[in-house]
Image 1 (cartoon, rainbow, N blue to C red):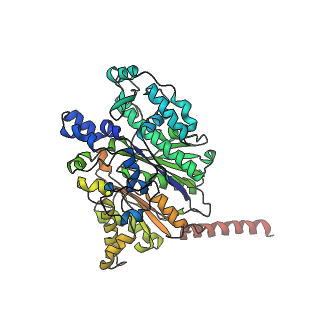
Image 2: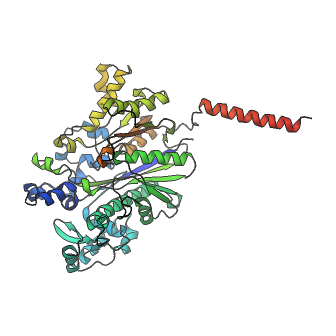
Image 3: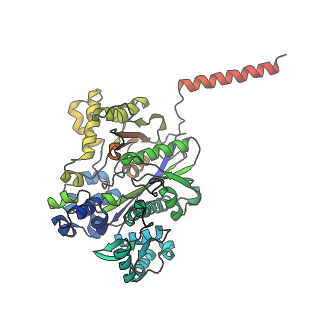
Length: 509
């Protein structure tokens, strides 16, 4: 039986001060042009937590607004607010920065995160009101005096943690000379870990999961934790599971730039189908480096800095339960090394090829989920509407193969895709945001299947010029067995004949 996806959680963390202090665009600007006009006025372009919560795009990500509703809403979306918007959604939540610092403290097992004592007291009260964080209050400790934090920042290389520009804590370096354990990198990695924990806790709560039933974790963000001897050794997966209480699980990290989550889900599906494990959580934490990545372009055009949230998700892949949508592992699309790097070659490899293997047409897929970046973020930076570009390429290939008329291309794009609503957190937009909404629609009988299309830029590592892509179809569970190949049938018949011949030899006188 094919493996299933039982559900997904999605979380956002509003981190305006981390935009300034940890986003790579801002940190590079501070090093190369410390008197920059951009740095002087950036704080005037940061949104309040209330604005972040009421932003229609964010409400879509956590499940309170349907993607179709967002698509019908005239832009600019950032000038609109969802009345009565809640920080909690059917898929997850949006967390403010101060609570997140508390969660980073909870996530820290080496006493690297130091919080001021009055700030710690305030966070304890907030944790008391958060149903998923109540049990972690004791891990916050009592905090320290501000003078100690100031000393660590000014004299010991610690990375400050700020709220509205005021220092409320810091992250200490984990080694005197190892750059991989510097305070900046430790802040980056603890942010991945803490946001991953929040996503897992939301997944467990929303699906009412028995924690002991989870036996494997795959973490698929874009960061790498390790030291000077193994820079990407890991293991975010086990560190997240440890704090989240998944005591029966082990796990590892899978990396593939933006395509990482899709690779991780394919790996999880294979492990489930081969019966190595029964329940696997695939989780991706947020990337501080991507905060304010396109901030200069946003400010230049008078927009607020929209990349002011860390994004994360967690997805449960399990044995077939006869109800949840299945992953069609018999037709995984892949952009092979020799496939070619042209847009048409990529779409041919990761969309057309798996559909042909399944005997499906392009229109048999109700929804495609390629790179789901929010166009309000990418268009001002000159990258255009990324999801729309992908849908047009998919539609154009359908036209070329004679499956739709050229005149129907616009309608195909509209009916088989969603507007982008994911934060530009690298790995987060690439396919996985649709899973929550897609599963819901399959179970409601509104659609039959959708396709996750993960794409990545491997050349960023300066190891290869190759592009990356991998895909799979998720569809309604009809409790069928996998398709058996002719080779398997021949093998089964041969084995049966051998057993029958053996029986005759033993029982014939």
